[in-house]
Image (cartoon, rainbow, N blue to C red; front, side, top):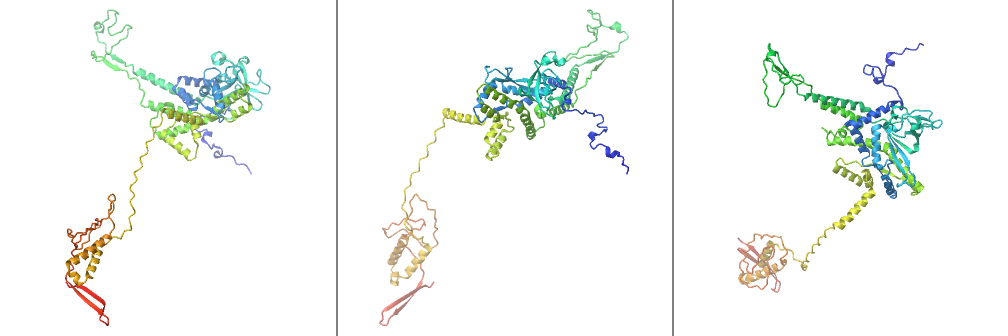
Length: 612
């Protein structure tokens, strides 16, 4: 069966970027490896360093990245507090050039990395008698110190090794040495020709750390961070210069006077007696007319004035430059707002999102590039030198290498109140620890606690706390009143009157006929009833029980009979006197007497009824 010929549809590119359409027909990039892609690396370095020196975008990028990644320094600490004072003393004199301390070297290494694409950190052993805390120092080398040399045979090169871009590699592809110039090639004539063997020195890879950002597997040398935006930086600088020159031309206010020569021009021409030229000409023979503030000029017949009209900068100049620099900032990995300081139309919430993302990128570069290629190697070189000088044992040196903790300079709070409150809540909720939060700020938790304790002691010594206020005197004990006796239940006035009426009804008719006897009996009964009421309470106790008198026809008058029984008025607001008048109305009494067989009275029943 014959094979079908492939149709056009079956062989066309699946991705537009892989095709040859009109949009990408002229896009013909080369296919190069990680080493060949760095061809012309020295030219890129030269242009990058020129941009850092002469352009604000290049200089600002390097400066802000250095501040962000290093700050005041990436500090090394240990749980074993013995190592820290020893390491701090050595860090003061760690620079082989004798200019900076260890943390200044960190900042310089980052500047070199961003400006030239890489930086070499070299260990420089010193004699044991050198006036140093440890017999070792650190030297920084610019990328130009390692030539872009490729060789398979070179004086001093071991058999089976080769040099690729100045780095010696063994048969397994492992870096074993670096070849450096003895002096910087940019300070002499060596940059204009190929390096000679007598100008280079071989340094073992164990004594060198190569700090650069690896972007492709197998990459040997670093490329400047500004390589992708160097063309934009140069173009924006040229554009800005052209606009500036155009504005300079616009400031040259020029006026041209045009006239028609009269028929008798030469006869009417006014001459300068000193030069012999017309009066309106200058000494060089050019016609001129001066302009003065507030002057008024009258032109002759046939003369006219024409002003120059130079081009303007344009209304879109600022927006175009802003857009151009936003691309430059993005290409260098820096937020535009931080690079330029332009925070136009940016809210604080948006700025927080931008800064947080940028800090994540910065932490990646700290822990992937700076700490493993410079900070940790310096600790290891120092520990080995301390063993050689007899200040540490081999076991202590191993402990110093393995237990060290590196703390980058902490970030400042974006919103101090909210950020601190959030961290405090995270600590209280067990999501993190107080020591971890202090370390993220770049501080030492032990030192912070010691400073707080020392500050508290100093404050207690210099500013003693004010004396505590005297306790308030205890309240005077109140007189204990005797427990009141069991009180009779409160009497109901209505029932009291009813009982009094029943008592009077039970009296003999002859007793009721005697008013004095009746009054005495009623008074005694009333006194007895009132005596059964609760005794009056002490004056200092208030009784809010208000008993309203009931509408009984009890009239109380001034006392007419002396009674030596003193009864205090009670809270029921009832006043009692010995004389009581009771209006019983007209009543009829019926008496039923029962007798026995001998005539003795055994039972008397007396019934009294009202007849009204």
